[in-house]
Image (cartoon, rainbow, N blue to C red; front, side, top):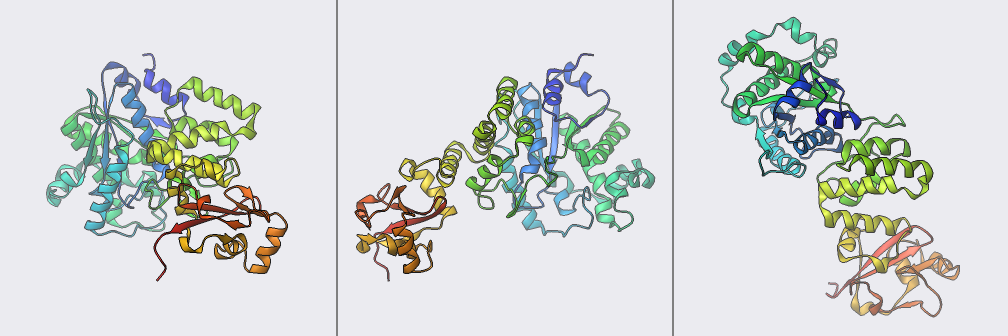
Amino acid sequence: MPESALLEELRWRGLIYQQTEGVAGALSAARVSAYAGFDPTAPSLHVGNLVPVMALAHLQRHGHRPILLVGGGTGLIGDPSGKANERTLSDAATVADNARRIRAQLERFVTMDGENAARVSDNIEWLKPLNAIDFLRDVGKHFTVNYMIAKDSVKSRMEAGISFTEFSYMLLQAYDFLRLNELEGATLQLGGSDQWGNITAGIELIRRFAGREAHGLTVPLVTTAAGTKFGKTEAGSVWLDPERTSPYQFYQFWIQTDDRDVGRYLRFFTLLDRERIETLDEQVSVAPQRREAQEALARDVTERVHGTESARAAAEVSALLFGQAEPTSLSSSAFSALRRELPPVNVHTGDFPIDVVDLLVRTGLTPSRGAARRLFEQGGAYINGVRATSESRMVQEDAAIHDRYVVVRKGARDYALVQISRVANS
């Protein structure tokens, strides 16, 4: 049977790692309900979680129905896949709060209305009331210990040791697939390549318990050309929660993508069409210094995760801090974003006019008045993008951008933000 348009799209984007036999036929024959699961082991998803999410987004765009499963139940247990040691278990209240936050993040990637509207489910609904004896009789009897320890997620932990709690995770995820098959008609599970064992266990349970056919498809785990772990920076993981990774920092993660990786990431993480991506590939080859592909990637993903206004503000702040824009061009939203990256120094309105030398010291750009004076005399001090001179040494209050901000710069790239306070200091 010819490959479905969806599989062709996913294959072109590099989003297929493994698939069970029969996936192509199922996707070509009818509309399929497919799910991917996300355990709330943290209060936010990170960028590495986005690969299966984007696969679901493509699935919906091709007329199929996505189900986003938040693991409020399995999150209490912990998936051993890819882990060298036991996870630290979180309490029920923490997991429930994490699940609520993650659910809101997932809903940004799919359409929640229409004929093939996405559905978000939480497996706490069927796992919490589950009776242990019934579970062992109805589910456990379909799996031998030999079958389970042959799976990579368990086999890799046998030497170091694995608790029965994490050993049982495979059965819980298999039960998820069975329940979603019964409740939502789900016949396809998507997941990272490390989930293959759990996915095939679910397929086996559906076959044995219900006599129905189901399928699985995994997406690759993302790597970088430089050999570093994807989604990590010096500050740690890159999160979707703006309180953990600001929209500007999120934007910067993507804008700094290596030329060798940007084509793959455009395919993985955006919905840009093939013609647009291939045009950007060409730009990487002929004019890499322009970084058009990185800008397209950063803007598209940031907009999807944080919204249009936040993405625009992040791009403006980026342009300022990397010398591609002047402070006076920044919008109010951009200054709000800049405040998080450059905590402002408050200067009372009564302090104006104020000496540039004083501003350099008060903002911490120079350690002393002597250093500030030398910097000023050498032409290395800038106010709102304009070099300070003897004629402009005294900064007036009406120089404030948006009637509130003054941007002070030392040399080419060292910035500080001044915010005018109209309340007297106590």
